[in-house]
Image (cartoon, rainbow, N blue to C red; front, top):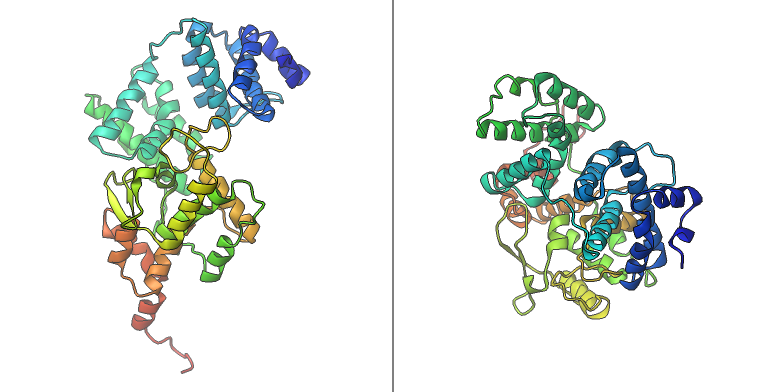
Length: 407
C-alpha cells in the first residue's frame, strides 16, 4: 500500500517534499512488519509529517536528526501553531520519531551523536540531581524539562538577570500556582547547580521569588466509602483491557501507590507465599515491603493469568498492542483512572486523590499519622500532617463548643 494514501493531501505533500520523503514508504512498511495496527501507523505518519514540515522550515540536515528531534519535541510542540493536520502529542511524536531514527541507523546512515552545548549542560544537571541530591527519576526529568528553555537562551549556561526575568514572566503567566512553585524550585536548583560549578548566582537568586501558596490550607480531596465502591464497580465485562485497568485501580486504592510505582511493579516484586509486595522504584529511593491485600493480589493474579500478553518484560503492566514488550507509561494509569471516574459518574480527575483516600480511611478506622506515614512511605512525618484535617474522630475530641450551639 502506498504510504501517502494514509495521509491527507496537505500532510502527504509536506512529507513528500521533505528530506524524509524517500524514507516514508520503508518507514510505513517497517511499522506494518512490526505488527502495528493501521490506525497507529497513520498516527505515527502524521507525527513524521509534522516533524518533516518543521525540519524543512528550519533547514536541518539529516545528520543532525537527533538534535533536531530534541528541539522539535522540547521547544516547538509547546507552542506549535502549524496548520492542521498535525500530531501534537508529545508521547506519540517521540515514539514516531524514535522509529525514524532506528530506520535510518538500520539503513546505514550515520547520525551526529555529539550533544549540543545545551544538552551537555542539562545532562550534567540531571546527573547532579540524581547523584548529589538523590531525587527520583520522575522529579529529575520534570526539573530538567522546566529549565531546558532557560538553558537554551544562554551561551555560557548561566542566564543573565534579564533572561531569567523573561523566562519567569513567560512561564509563570501560563501555569497554576502549584506549578509555579515547581518552576521556582526547578530554577533555584539549577542556579545552585551553576554555583556548584563555580558560577556567581548571588545576583540571580533574589529574582526567583516563590509565589504565595499555602500548601496546608486546603483540605485533602478524598472519596467517600460509597464513591470508592462505585469506582471499583465501574469495570463492565466488555471493557477493553478490563483486568489490567481493574488491577491498576486496586493498586492505587488499596496500596496508595503513585503512578510511577504502579508502572514500575515487576513480577519478582510480589511474594505470593508471604503475601507482600516490594516497592523498590519509589520516590524515596528506598525498598519498602507492604502487605498485599487479598483483593489487590487477586486482581493482579487474574490479570497475569488471563489477560497479560506473552512478553519478555518483567514488568507486571505491559502494553496490549505492539510492541507488547514495552511497559505501560504513567499516561496509561492517568487514562485508566480518569475513565473509571467517568464511568462511575464521579467528578474527579486526579490519580493522587486515591492516595489521599487511603490515608483518610486509615485515620477513620483508628490509625495514627505515624501509620499513615508508614503506609504512604513518607520520609518525614510532617508530610503526613495535612491528613490531620480529615481525622474527624480525633478533631471532634478536641473541638471547643461553639457559642450559641444547641446541646
